[in-house]
Length: 631
Ligand SMILES: [Ca+2]
Image (cartoon, rainbow, N blue to C red; front, side, top):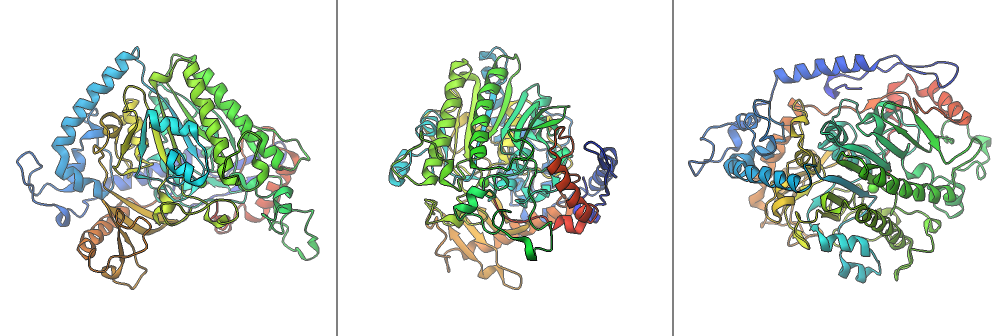
Protein backbone atom coordinates (compact mmCIF):
# COMPACT_ATOMS: atom_id res chain seq x y z
CA UNK A 1 0.00 0.00 0.00
CA UNK A 2 1.16 3.46 -0.63
CA UNK A 3 1.03 4.54 2.96
CA UNK A 4 3.61 6.81 4.38
CA UNK A 5 4.97 5.68 7.72
CA UNK A 6 4.24 9.02 9.35
CA UNK A 7 0.68 8.77 8.17
CA UNK A 8 -0.10 5.99 10.59
CA UNK A 9 -0.49 2.29 10.09
CA UNK A 10 -2.05 1.06 6.87
CA UNK A 11 -5.35 -0.70 7.02
CA UNK A 12 -5.39 -3.96 5.17
CA UNK A 13 -8.45 -6.09 5.25
CA UNK A 14 -7.99 -9.43 3.63
CA UNK A 15 -10.77 -11.85 2.97
CA UNK A 16 -10.63 -15.37 1.69
CA UNK A 17 -13.28 -16.21 -0.83
CA UNK A 18 -14.06 -19.85 -1.38
CA UNK A 19 -13.57 -21.37 -4.76
CA UNK A 20 -10.73 -21.06 -7.21
CA UNK A 21 -7.98 -18.75 -6.11
CA UNK A 22 -10.49 -16.52 -4.44
CA UNK A 23 -8.29 -13.78 -3.17
CA UNK A 24 -9.90 -10.42 -2.69
CA UNK A 25 -8.49 -7.26 -1.25
CA UNK A 26 -10.67 -5.18 1.03
CA UNK A 27 -8.70 -2.20 -0.19
CA UNK A 28 -8.53 -1.72 -3.94
CA UNK A 29 -5.60 -0.46 -5.92
CA UNK A 30 -7.64 2.60 -6.83
CA UNK A 31 -8.10 3.30 -3.12
CA UNK A 32 -4.42 2.99 -2.58
CA UNK A 33 -3.57 5.27 -5.46
CA UNK A 34 -6.02 7.85 -4.17
CA UNK A 35 -4.40 7.64 -0.72
CA UNK A 36 -1.01 7.95 -2.28
CA UNK A 37 -2.07 11.00 -4.24
CA UNK A 38 -3.41 12.60 -1.08
CA UNK A 39 -0.12 11.94 0.62
CA UNK A 40 1.82 13.39 -2.27
CA UNK A 41 -0.28 16.51 -2.33
CA UNK A 42 0.50 16.93 1.34
CA UNK A 43 4.18 16.50 0.66
CA UNK A 44 4.25 19.01 -2.12
CA UNK A 45 2.86 21.71 0.11
CA UNK A 46 5.79 21.20 2.43
CA UNK A 47 8.69 21.03 0.01
CA UNK A 48 11.79 21.09 2.16
CA UNK A 49 13.94 24.09 2.58
CA UNK A 50 16.80 21.84 3.39
CA UNK A 51 18.86 23.47 6.04
CA UNK A 52 20.03 26.05 3.63
CA UNK A 53 21.74 28.29 6.11
CA UNK A 54 24.28 25.88 7.43
CA UNK A 55 25.76 24.32 4.39
CA UNK A 56 26.52 26.91 1.82
CA UNK A 57 30.14 27.71 1.25
CA UNK A 58 30.92 31.15 -0.16
CA UNK A 59 31.08 30.91 -3.92
CA UNK A 60 34.56 31.73 -5.10
CA UNK A 61 33.87 32.45 -8.73
CA UNK A 62 31.29 34.38 -10.61
CA UNK A 63 30.24 31.30 -12.52
CA UNK A 64 29.10 29.62 -9.34
CA UNK A 65 25.61 30.17 -7.98
CA UNK A 66 25.12 33.49 -6.26
CA UNK A 67 25.91 33.72 -2.61
CA UNK A 68 22.86 32.93 -0.57
CA UNK A 69 21.33 30.62 -3.17
CA UNK A 70 19.68 27.95 -1.10
CA UNK A 71 20.05 24.28 -1.77
CA UNK A 72 16.34 24.21 -2.40
CA UNK A 73 16.61 26.89 -5.02
CA UNK A 74 19.39 24.92 -6.61
CA UNK A 75 17.16 21.86 -6.48
CA UNK A 76 14.57 23.77 -8.45
CA UNK A 77 17.16 24.57 -11.08
CA UNK A 78 18.82 21.21 -11.09
CA UNK A 79 21.12 20.63 -13.99
CA UNK A 80 22.66 17.48 -15.30
CA UNK A 81 20.14 14.69 -15.36
CA UNK A 82 17.43 17.23 -15.70
CA UNK A 83 18.92 18.99 -18.65
CA UNK A 84 16.32 17.95 -21.18
CA UNK A 85 13.24 18.63 -19.12
CA UNK A 86 12.82 22.36 -19.41
CA UNK A 87 9.88 23.59 -17.45
CA UNK A 88 9.47 20.46 -15.36
CA UNK A 89 10.24 20.16 -11.70
CA UNK A 90 13.71 18.91 -10.83
CA UNK A 91 14.49 15.51 -9.43
CA UNK A 92 14.56 15.71 -5.65
CA UNK A 93 17.92 14.33 -4.58
CA UNK A 94 19.29 13.92 -1.07
CA UNK A 95 20.65 17.00 0.64
CA UNK A 96 24.33 16.24 0.12
CA UNK A 97 23.93 16.31 -3.66
CA UNK A 98 23.11 20.02 -3.49
CA UNK A 99 26.32 20.74 -1.63
CA UNK A 100 28.15 19.47 -4.70
CA UNK A 101 25.73 21.06 -7.14
CA UNK A 102 26.40 24.42 -5.54
CA UNK A 103 30.04 24.00 -6.45
CA UNK A 104 29.73 22.32 -9.86
CA UNK A 105 26.46 23.53 -11.39
CA UNK A 106 28.04 25.28 -14.36
CA UNK A 107 30.69 22.65 -14.97
CA UNK A 108 28.16 19.84 -14.94
CA UNK A 109 25.73 21.75 -17.14
CA UNK A 110 28.46 22.22 -19.74
CA UNK A 111 29.50 18.60 -19.46
CA UNK A 112 25.88 17.52 -19.82
CA UNK A 113 25.60 19.32 -23.13
CA UNK A 114 28.63 17.35 -24.34
CA UNK A 115 27.18 14.11 -23.02
CA UNK A 116 23.90 14.71 -24.85
CA UNK A 117 25.87 15.26 -28.03
CA UNK A 118 27.84 12.03 -27.51
CA UNK A 119 24.68 10.06 -26.76
CA UNK A 120 23.12 11.43 -29.94
CA UNK A 121 26.17 10.39 -31.95
CA UNK A 122 26.10 6.88 -30.49
CA UNK A 123 22.44 6.64 -31.34
CA UNK A 124 23.05 7.84 -34.87
CA UNK A 125 25.77 5.23 -35.33
CA UNK A 126 23.24 2.57 -34.35
CA UNK A 127 20.49 3.51 -36.75
CA UNK A 128 18.73 5.77 -34.26
CA UNK A 129 18.33 2.97 -31.72
CA UNK A 130 19.07 3.52 -28.06
CA UNK A 131 21.49 1.00 -26.52
CA UNK A 132 20.24 -2.28 -25.10
CA UNK A 133 20.91 -2.77 -21.40
CA UNK A 134 21.75 -6.17 -19.89
CA UNK A 135 22.01 -5.98 -16.11
CA UNK A 136 23.37 -9.09 -14.38
CA UNK A 137 23.16 -8.94 -10.60
CA UNK A 138 25.06 -11.76 -8.87
CA UNK A 139 24.02 -12.90 -5.44
CA UNK A 140 26.61 -12.14 -2.75
CA UNK A 141 29.77 -11.03 -4.50
CA UNK A 142 31.94 -8.67 -2.54
CA UNK A 143 34.70 -6.65 -4.16
CA UNK A 144 37.61 -8.77 -5.37
CA UNK A 145 35.65 -12.02 -5.45
CA UNK A 146 35.74 -12.20 -9.23
CA UNK A 147 36.83 -10.42 -12.37
CA UNK A 148 40.31 -9.57 -11.12
CA UNK A 149 42.64 -12.31 -12.39
CA UNK A 150 45.42 -11.85 -9.84
CA UNK A 151 42.96 -12.09 -6.97
CA UNK A 152 41.32 -15.10 -8.55
CA UNK A 153 44.73 -16.73 -8.68
CA UNK A 154 45.27 -15.99 -5.01
CA UNK A 155 42.02 -17.68 -4.10
CA UNK A 156 42.15 -20.52 -6.58
CA UNK A 157 39.02 -19.23 -8.27
CA UNK A 158 38.31 -18.89 -11.94
CA UNK A 159 36.06 -16.34 -13.64
CA UNK A 160 37.48 -15.98 -17.16
CA UNK A 161 34.28 -14.59 -18.66
CA UNK A 162 33.86 -11.80 -16.14
CA UNK A 163 37.60 -11.13 -16.39
CA UNK A 164 37.05 -10.61 -20.12
CA UNK A 165 34.28 -8.08 -19.50
CA UNK A 166 36.67 -6.19 -17.23
CA UNK A 167 39.38 -6.34 -19.88
CA UNK A 168 37.04 -5.09 -22.60
CA UNK A 169 35.27 -2.60 -20.37
CA UNK A 170 35.48 -0.97 -17.00
CA UNK A 171 36.10 -2.09 -13.42
CA UNK A 172 34.40 -0.03 -10.73
CA UNK A 173 36.49 -0.03 -7.56
CA UNK A 174 34.05 1.95 -5.40
CA UNK A 175 30.63 0.50 -6.22
CA UNK A 176 28.37 0.60 -3.15
CA UNK A 177 25.38 -1.70 -3.06
CA UNK A 178 23.06 -1.89 -0.10
CA UNK A 179 24.33 -4.55 2.26
CA UNK A 180 21.85 -7.35 1.63
CA UNK A 181 19.68 -8.86 -1.11
CA UNK A 182 16.26 -7.21 -1.01
CA UNK A 183 17.51 -3.69 -0.22
CA UNK A 184 19.98 -3.68 -3.12
CA UNK A 185 17.34 -4.95 -5.51
CA UNK A 186 14.88 -2.30 -4.30
CA UNK A 187 17.54 0.42 -4.62
CA UNK A 188 18.38 -0.58 -8.18
CA UNK A 189 14.74 -0.77 -9.20
CA UNK A 190 13.79 2.59 -7.66
CA UNK A 191 16.99 4.64 -7.48
CA UNK A 192 16.29 5.15 -3.78
CA UNK A 193 17.91 3.97 -0.58
CA UNK A 194 15.93 0.85 0.28
CA UNK A 195 14.88 2.35 3.59
CA UNK A 196 12.89 5.00 1.71
CA UNK A 197 10.90 2.30 -0.09
CA UNK A 198 10.09 0.22 2.99
CA UNK A 199 12.10 -2.64 1.49
CA UNK A 200 14.98 -2.42 3.95
CA UNK A 201 14.17 -5.82 5.41
CA UNK A 202 15.12 -9.04 3.69
CA UNK A 203 12.42 -11.64 4.10
CA UNK A 204 13.17 -15.29 4.20
CA UNK A 205 10.32 -17.50 5.28
CA UNK A 206 7.23 -17.48 3.09
CA UNK A 207 4.56 -16.41 2.83
CA UNK A 208 5.35 -12.72 3.16
CA UNK A 209 2.17 -10.91 2.24
CA UNK A 210 4.17 -7.88 1.18
CA UNK A 211 6.51 -6.39 -1.38
CA UNK A 212 7.61 -3.48 -3.51
CA UNK A 213 5.05 -0.70 -3.52
CA UNK A 214 3.14 -0.33 -6.78
CA UNK A 215 3.63 3.40 -6.50
CA UNK A 216 7.38 3.09 -6.94
CA UNK A 217 8.44 4.01 -10.46
CA UNK A 218 10.87 1.28 -11.37
CA UNK A 219 13.69 1.37 -13.88
CA UNK A 220 11.72 -1.21 -15.88
CA UNK A 221 8.80 1.20 -16.06
CA UNK A 222 11.04 4.09 -17.08
CA UNK A 223 12.68 2.03 -19.81
CA UNK A 224 9.38 0.56 -20.93
CA UNK A 225 7.95 4.07 -21.25
CA UNK A 226 11.02 4.98 -23.31
CA UNK A 227 10.13 2.27 -25.82
CA UNK A 228 12.25 -0.56 -24.44
CA UNK A 229 11.19 -4.20 -24.36
CA UNK A 230 11.81 -5.43 -20.81
CA UNK A 231 12.43 -8.95 -19.46
CA UNK A 232 13.30 -10.12 -15.97
CA UNK A 233 14.80 -13.56 -15.35
CA UNK A 234 15.92 -15.07 -12.03
CA UNK A 235 15.82 -14.05 -8.39
CA UNK A 236 13.39 -11.23 -7.60
CA UNK A 237 13.01 -11.15 -3.83
CA UNK A 238 10.84 -8.05 -3.84
CA UNK A 239 7.64 -9.59 -2.57
CA UNK A 240 4.96 -12.22 -3.13
CA UNK A 241 1.94 -9.98 -3.72
CA UNK A 242 0.45 -8.99 -7.03
CA UNK A 243 1.57 -5.37 -7.17
CA UNK A 244 5.16 -6.40 -6.44
CA UNK A 245 5.43 -8.99 -9.23
CA UNK A 246 7.88 -7.93 -11.94
CA UNK A 247 5.14 -8.16 -14.58
CA UNK A 248 3.32 -5.46 -12.60
CA UNK A 249 6.47 -3.41 -12.07
CA UNK A 250 7.35 -2.70 -15.68
CA UNK A 251 8.51 -5.98 -17.20
CA UNK A 252 6.91 -7.39 -20.35
CA UNK A 253 7.98 -10.90 -19.37
CA UNK A 254 9.32 -12.39 -16.17
CA UNK A 255 10.36 -15.80 -14.89
CA UNK A 256 11.36 -15.78 -11.24
CA UNK A 257 11.21 -17.58 -7.91
CA UNK A 258 8.39 -16.20 -5.77
CA UNK A 259 10.74 -16.02 -2.78
CA UNK A 260 14.47 -16.26 -2.28
CA UNK A 261 16.63 -19.37 -2.34
CA UNK A 262 15.96 -20.23 1.29
CA UNK A 263 12.52 -21.44 0.28
CA UNK A 264 13.82 -24.23 -1.86
CA UNK A 265 17.50 -24.78 -1.34
CA UNK A 266 18.04 -24.13 2.36
CA UNK A 267 14.84 -25.71 3.61
CA UNK A 268 14.97 -29.11 1.96
CA UNK A 269 15.59 -32.65 3.10
CA UNK A 270 18.97 -32.42 1.33
CA UNK A 271 19.94 -29.37 3.36
CA UNK A 272 18.87 -31.04 6.57
CA UNK A 273 20.86 -34.21 5.84
CA UNK A 274 23.85 -31.98 5.12
CA UNK A 275 23.48 -30.25 8.50
CA UNK A 276 22.62 -26.88 6.95
CA UNK A 277 19.00 -26.84 8.14
CA UNK A 278 17.86 -27.92 11.55
CA UNK A 279 14.56 -29.09 12.99
CA UNK A 280 12.49 -28.20 9.97
CA UNK A 281 11.55 -31.07 7.71
CA UNK A 282 8.53 -33.24 8.58
CA UNK A 283 10.74 -36.28 8.09
CA UNK A 284 12.85 -35.16 11.04
CA UNK A 285 10.39 -33.73 13.51
CA UNK A 286 7.84 -35.63 15.54
CA UNK A 287 5.30 -32.87 16.20
CA UNK A 288 4.26 -34.35 19.56
CA UNK A 289 4.87 -31.00 21.26
CA UNK A 290 4.49 -28.83 18.19
CA UNK A 291 1.43 -26.86 19.24
CA UNK A 292 1.71 -24.06 16.71
CA UNK A 293 1.00 -25.55 13.28
CA UNK A 294 2.12 -22.37 11.54
CA UNK A 295 5.63 -22.30 13.02
CA UNK A 296 6.81 -24.47 10.15
CA UNK A 297 5.02 -23.95 6.87
CA UNK A 298 5.70 -25.83 3.64
CA UNK A 299 4.28 -25.86 0.12
CA UNK A 300 4.80 -22.23 -0.80
CA UNK A 301 4.83 -21.13 -4.41
CA UNK A 302 8.21 -21.90 -5.95
CA UNK A 303 8.96 -20.38 -9.35
CA UNK A 304 6.57 -18.68 -11.74
CA UNK A 305 6.47 -16.92 -15.06
CA UNK A 306 4.12 -14.63 -16.90
CA UNK A 307 3.69 -11.64 -19.15
CA UNK A 308 2.62 -8.06 -18.47
CA UNK A 309 -1.14 -7.78 -18.16
CA UNK A 310 -1.51 -11.52 -17.57
CA UNK A 311 -1.34 -13.99 -14.74
CA UNK A 312 1.52 -16.09 -13.41
CA UNK A 313 1.99 -19.83 -13.76
CA UNK A 314 4.06 -21.87 -11.33
CA UNK A 315 6.46 -24.16 -13.17
CA UNK A 316 8.85 -27.01 -12.43
CA UNK A 317 6.89 -28.56 -9.58
CA UNK A 318 3.85 -30.81 -9.34
CA UNK A 319 1.25 -31.17 -6.64
CA UNK A 320 2.61 -33.49 -3.95
CA UNK A 321 6.23 -32.67 -4.75
CA UNK A 322 8.58 -30.99 -2.29
CA UNK A 323 11.56 -28.91 -3.44
CA UNK A 324 14.95 -30.56 -3.31
CA UNK A 325 18.41 -29.74 -4.58
CA UNK A 326 17.77 -31.45 -7.90
CA UNK A 327 14.86 -29.09 -8.48
CA UNK A 328 17.02 -26.14 -7.47
CA UNK A 329 19.66 -27.10 -10.02
CA UNK A 330 17.07 -27.62 -12.73
CA UNK A 331 15.49 -24.26 -11.98
CA UNK A 332 18.82 -22.42 -12.17
CA UNK A 333 19.61 -24.12 -15.45
CA UNK A 334 16.20 -23.19 -16.82
CA UNK A 335 16.63 -19.55 -15.85
CA UNK A 336 19.85 -19.63 -17.83
CA UNK A 337 18.08 -21.16 -20.84
CA UNK A 338 15.35 -18.55 -20.52
CA UNK A 339 17.87 -15.73 -20.52
CA UNK A 340 19.34 -16.98 -23.77
CA UNK A 341 15.83 -17.38 -25.22
CA UNK A 342 14.94 -13.87 -24.08
CA UNK A 343 18.04 -12.48 -25.77
CA UNK A 344 17.03 -14.11 -29.05
CA UNK A 345 13.46 -12.85 -28.76
CA UNK A 346 14.51 -9.34 -27.76
CA UNK A 347 17.22 -9.03 -30.39
CA UNK A 348 14.76 -9.89 -33.14
CA UNK A 349 12.59 -6.87 -32.30
CA UNK A 350 13.05 -3.31 -33.52
CA UNK A 351 12.86 -2.03 -29.99
CA UNK A 352 15.88 -1.56 -27.76
CA UNK A 353 15.69 -3.87 -24.76
CA UNK A 354 16.39 -4.12 -21.06
CA UNK A 355 17.23 -7.62 -19.85
CA UNK A 356 17.43 -7.95 -16.09
CA UNK A 357 19.14 -11.22 -15.13
CA UNK A 358 19.52 -11.96 -11.42
CA UNK A 359 20.97 -15.47 -11.00
CA UNK A 360 20.42 -17.20 -7.67
CA UNK A 361 24.03 -18.18 -7.46
CA UNK A 362 26.88 -17.98 -6.46
CA UNK A 363 25.05 -18.18 -3.14
CA UNK A 364 25.66 -21.83 -2.42
CA UNK A 365 24.56 -23.89 0.52
CA UNK A 366 25.26 -27.43 -0.51
CA UNK A 367 27.86 -29.14 -2.62
CA UNK A 368 24.99 -30.51 -4.62
CA UNK A 369 24.65 -27.16 -6.38
CA UNK A 370 27.87 -28.18 -8.12
CA UNK A 371 27.96 -29.74 -11.49
CA UNK A 372 30.88 -31.30 -13.30
CA UNK A 373 31.67 -28.20 -15.34
CA UNK A 374 32.73 -25.92 -12.54
CA UNK A 375 35.92 -27.28 -11.05
CA UNK A 376 38.41 -24.77 -9.70
CA UNK A 377 41.82 -25.10 -8.01
CA UNK A 378 40.04 -23.88 -4.85
CA UNK A 379 37.61 -26.79 -4.94
CA UNK A 380 35.21 -25.26 -2.39
CA UNK A 381 31.56 -24.85 -3.10
CA UNK A 382 31.80 -21.05 -3.06
CA UNK A 383 34.56 -20.82 -5.66
CA UNK A 384 32.93 -23.53 -7.71
CA UNK A 385 29.59 -21.75 -7.65
CA UNK A 386 31.37 -18.61 -8.86
CA UNK A 387 32.70 -20.67 -11.74
CA UNK A 388 29.13 -21.74 -12.61
CA UNK A 389 27.83 -18.20 -12.65
CA UNK A 390 30.84 -17.10 -14.66
CA UNK A 391 29.95 -19.74 -17.22
CA UNK A 392 26.40 -18.34 -17.30
CA UNK A 393 27.80 -14.86 -17.95
CA UNK A 394 30.04 -16.27 -20.70
CA UNK A 395 27.07 -17.86 -22.44
CA UNK A 396 25.16 -14.58 -22.30
CA UNK A 397 28.10 -12.70 -23.81
CA UNK A 398 28.53 -15.31 -26.53
CA UNK A 399 24.85 -15.09 -27.45
CA UNK A 400 25.00 -11.27 -27.58
CA UNK A 401 27.92 -11.55 -29.98
CA UNK A 402 26.22 -14.23 -32.06
CA UNK A 403 23.12 -12.07 -32.40
CA UNK A 404 25.26 -9.21 -33.71
CA UNK A 405 24.12 -6.75 -31.07
CA UNK A 406 27.24 -6.38 -28.94
CA UNK A 407 28.19 -2.93 -30.21
CA UNK A 408 24.93 -1.41 -29.07
CA UNK A 409 24.53 -3.32 -25.82
CA UNK A 410 25.63 -2.14 -22.39
CA UNK A 411 26.38 -5.06 -20.09
CA UNK A 412 26.75 -4.46 -16.35
CA UNK A 413 27.74 -7.32 -14.04
CA UNK A 414 27.88 -6.73 -10.31
CA UNK A 415 27.29 -8.25 -6.89
CA UNK A 416 24.33 -7.35 -4.69
CA UNK A 417 26.20 -7.41 -1.35
CA UNK A 418 29.25 -8.81 0.41
CA UNK A 419 29.84 -12.44 1.29
CA UNK A 420 27.70 -14.57 3.54
CA UNK A 421 30.15 -14.57 6.38
CA UNK A 422 27.95 -16.83 8.48
CA UNK A 423 29.37 -19.83 6.68
CA UNK A 424 32.94 -18.65 6.87
CA UNK A 425 35.55 -21.30 7.29
CA UNK A 426 33.52 -24.23 6.06
CA UNK A 427 32.58 -23.08 2.60
CA UNK A 428 35.40 -20.96 1.27
CA UNK A 429 33.57 -17.74 2.07
CA UNK A 430 36.01 -15.39 3.74
CA UNK A 431 36.68 -11.74 4.25
CA UNK A 432 38.81 -10.49 1.46
CA UNK A 433 39.99 -6.94 1.02
CA UNK A 434 37.33 -5.39 3.21
CA UNK A 435 36.15 -6.40 6.64
CA UNK A 436 32.49 -7.25 7.22
CA UNK A 437 29.85 -9.45 5.73
CA UNK A 438 26.43 -9.37 4.15
CA UNK A 439 24.13 -7.26 6.32
CA UNK A 440 26.93 -5.18 7.84
CA UNK A 441 27.60 -1.49 7.30
CA UNK A 442 31.32 -2.18 7.16
CA UNK A 443 32.76 -1.86 3.67
CA UNK A 444 32.68 -5.65 3.30
CA UNK A 445 28.89 -5.56 3.44
CA UNK A 446 28.46 -2.85 0.79
CA UNK A 447 31.47 -2.83 -1.54
CA UNK A 448 30.84 -5.18 -4.43
CA UNK A 449 32.60 -6.17 -7.61
CA UNK A 450 31.15 -4.30 -10.58
CA UNK A 451 32.03 -4.25 -14.26
CA UNK A 452 30.54 -2.75 -17.38
CA UNK A 453 31.12 -3.16 -21.09
CA UNK A 454 29.95 -0.86 -23.85
CA UNK A 455 32.17 -1.30 -26.91
CA UNK A 456 33.34 1.91 -28.49
CA UNK A 457 32.02 3.99 -25.61
CA UNK A 458 33.58 2.71 -22.39
CA UNK A 459 37.33 2.61 -22.67
CA UNK A 460 38.60 -0.98 -22.63
CA UNK A 461 40.46 -1.94 -19.46
CA UNK A 462 39.58 1.25 -17.62
CA UNK A 463 39.40 1.41 -13.84
CA UNK A 464 37.12 3.82 -12.05
CA UNK A 465 38.05 5.26 -8.66
CA UNK A 466 34.92 7.41 -8.34
CA UNK A 467 32.25 6.42 -5.87
CA UNK A 468 29.06 5.04 -7.39
CA UNK A 469 25.90 3.69 -5.75
CA UNK A 470 23.71 0.92 -7.19
CA UNK A 471 20.82 3.41 -7.26
CA UNK A 472 22.87 5.67 -9.54
CA UNK A 473 22.36 3.11 -12.29
CA UNK A 474 18.63 3.87 -12.18
CA UNK A 475 19.13 7.52 -13.00
CA UNK A 476 21.98 6.81 -15.40
CA UNK A 477 20.11 4.14 -17.39
CA UNK A 478 17.07 6.42 -17.55
CA UNK A 479 19.27 9.20 -18.97
CA UNK A 480 20.91 6.92 -21.52
CA UNK A 481 17.48 5.63 -22.56
CA UNK A 482 16.20 9.19 -22.91
CA UNK A 483 13.66 9.13 -20.10
CA UNK A 484 15.05 11.32 -17.33
CA UNK A 485 11.71 13.12 -17.45
CA UNK A 486 9.97 9.94 -16.30
CA UNK A 487 11.83 9.91 -12.98
CA UNK A 488 9.31 10.90 -10.31
CA UNK A 489 9.69 14.33 -8.70
CA UNK A 490 7.51 13.82 -5.64
CA UNK A 491 9.97 11.77 -3.60
CA UNK A 492 13.66 11.64 -2.89
CA UNK A 493 15.64 9.83 -5.58
CA UNK A 494 19.11 9.07 -4.26
CA UNK A 495 20.45 7.90 -7.60
CA UNK A 496 22.78 10.45 -9.19
CA UNK A 497 23.17 10.62 -12.95
CA UNK A 498 26.60 9.08 -13.55
CA UNK A 499 26.45 9.04 -17.35
CA UNK A 500 29.71 11.00 -17.36
CA UNK A 501 31.56 8.03 -15.84
CA UNK A 502 30.27 5.76 -18.61
CA UNK A 503 31.08 8.22 -21.39
CA UNK A 504 34.16 10.01 -20.10
CA UNK A 505 35.67 7.62 -17.58
CA UNK A 506 37.59 7.98 -14.35
CA UNK A 507 37.33 11.19 -12.28
CA UNK A 508 34.05 12.17 -13.92
CA UNK A 509 31.87 10.93 -11.06
CA UNK A 510 29.31 13.17 -9.37
CA UNK A 511 29.08 11.45 -6.00
CA UNK A 512 31.42 11.70 -3.05
CA UNK A 513 29.17 10.47 -0.24
CA UNK A 514 26.87 7.68 0.82
CA UNK A 515 24.79 6.95 3.89
CA UNK A 516 24.93 3.30 4.95
CA UNK A 517 21.96 1.69 6.65
CA UNK A 518 21.43 -1.57 8.45
CA UNK A 519 17.69 -2.12 8.21
CA UNK A 520 16.25 1.30 9.12
CA UNK A 521 19.22 2.42 11.18
CA UNK A 522 21.78 4.84 9.80
CA UNK A 523 25.03 3.18 10.83
CA UNK A 524 27.76 4.91 8.86
CA UNK A 525 28.40 7.72 6.43
CA UNK A 526 31.16 7.91 3.85
CA UNK A 527 32.43 11.17 2.39
CA UNK A 528 35.35 10.97 -0.02
CA UNK A 529 37.94 8.72 1.69
CA UNK A 530 36.61 9.25 5.22
CA UNK A 531 34.00 7.12 6.96
CA UNK A 532 32.28 7.62 10.27
CA UNK A 533 30.66 4.83 12.26
CA UNK A 534 27.74 6.51 13.98
CA UNK A 535 27.69 5.87 17.71
CA UNK A 536 24.57 4.77 19.57
CA UNK A 537 22.28 7.16 21.40
CA UNK A 538 23.89 9.04 24.24
CA UNK A 539 27.38 9.10 22.75
CA UNK A 540 28.90 12.27 21.41
CA UNK A 541 29.57 11.87 17.67
CA UNK A 542 32.89 13.60 18.34
CA UNK A 543 33.91 10.33 19.96
CA UNK A 544 32.76 8.22 17.01
CA UNK A 545 35.19 6.09 15.07
CA UNK A 546 36.37 7.80 11.90
CA UNK A 547 38.34 5.78 9.37
CA UNK A 548 40.43 6.70 6.37
CA UNK A 549 39.37 4.09 3.82
CA UNK A 550 42.52 4.47 1.75
CA UNK A 551 44.75 3.97 4.74
CA UNK A 552 42.60 1.44 6.51
CA UNK A 553 40.19 -0.31 4.14
CA UNK A 554 39.37 -2.90 6.78
CA UNK A 555 38.22 -0.21 9.23
CA UNK A 556 40.28 -1.63 12.04
CA UNK A 557 42.01 1.49 13.35
CA UNK A 558 39.74 4.42 14.18
CA UNK A 559 41.63 7.66 13.84
CA UNK A 560 42.22 9.33 17.19
CA UNK A 561 43.22 12.86 16.30
CA UNK A 562 43.72 12.46 12.55
CA UNK A 563 40.02 12.32 11.75
CA UNK A 564 38.76 14.89 14.23
CA UNK A 565 38.51 17.55 11.54
CA UNK A 566 35.84 15.55 9.73
CA UNK A 567 33.49 15.35 12.70
CA UNK A 568 31.70 18.63 12.08
CA UNK A 569 31.04 18.08 8.37
CA UNK A 570 29.89 14.52 9.09
CA UNK A 571 27.44 15.70 11.73
CA UNK A 572 26.19 18.37 9.30
CA UNK A 573 25.65 15.68 6.64
CA UNK A 574 23.71 13.51 9.04
CA UNK A 575 21.52 16.36 10.28
CA UNK A 576 20.64 17.40 6.74
CA UNK A 577 19.96 13.86 5.64
CA UNK A 578 17.62 13.30 8.58
CA UNK A 579 15.88 16.65 8.05
CA UNK A 580 15.24 15.64 4.48
CA UNK A 581 13.66 12.45 5.80
CA UNK A 582 11.41 14.50 8.07
CA UNK A 583 10.12 16.27 4.97
CA UNK A 584 10.00 13.13 2.85
CA UNK A 585 9.24 10.30 5.27
CA UNK A 586 10.20 6.77 4.41
CA UNK A 587 7.44 4.81 2.76
CA UNK A 588 6.12 1.47 3.81
CA UNK A 589 6.25 -1.46 1.47
CA UNK A 590 2.95 -2.72 0.12
CA UNK A 591 0.99 -5.43 1.89
CA UNK A 592 -1.64 -7.79 0.63
CA UNK A 593 -2.60 -11.31 -0.26
CA UNK A 594 0.27 -13.62 -1.14
CA UNK A 595 0.18 -15.40 -4.50
CA UNK A 596 -2.75 -13.55 -6.03
CA UNK A 597 -3.01 -14.28 -9.76
CA UNK A 598 -0.99 -17.48 -9.71
CA UNK A 599 -3.41 -19.31 -11.94
CA UNK A 600 -2.28 -22.89 -11.31
CA UNK A 601 -1.68 -22.62 -7.58
CA UNK A 602 -1.25 -26.12 -6.08
CA UNK A 603 -3.99 -27.37 -3.71
CA UNK A 604 -1.49 -27.76 -0.86
CA UNK A 605 -0.28 -24.18 -1.36
CA UNK A 606 -3.81 -22.89 -1.24
CA UNK A 607 -4.46 -24.82 1.94
CA UNK A 608 -1.27 -23.48 3.53
CA UNK A 609 -2.14 -19.89 2.65
CA UNK A 610 -5.65 -20.26 3.96
CA UNK A 611 -4.29 -21.57 7.28
CA UNK A 612 -1.85 -18.69 7.41
CA UNK A 613 -4.50 -16.11 6.58
CA UNK A 614 -6.91 -17.36 9.23
CA UNK A 615 -4.35 -16.34 11.82
CA UNK A 616 -2.37 -13.54 10.25
CA UNK A 617 -4.51 -12.23 7.42
CA UNK A 618 -6.23 -9.36 9.18
CA UNK A 619 -3.74 -8.83 11.98
CA UNK A 620 -1.37 -6.35 10.47
CA UNK A 621 0.95 -6.24 13.46
CA UNK A 622 1.47 -9.94 13.25
CA UNK A 623 2.00 -9.79 9.52
CA UNK A 624 4.78 -7.32 10.20
CA UNK A 625 6.26 -9.97 12.45
CA UNK A 626 6.88 -12.15 9.42
CA UNK A 627 9.84 -9.96 8.64
CA UNK A 628 13.21 -11.41 9.51
CA UNK A 629 16.77 -10.68 8.58
CA UNK A 630 18.47 -13.25 6.47
CA UNK A 631 19.50 -13.91 2.94
CA1 LIG B 1 22.60 -11.28 -1.82
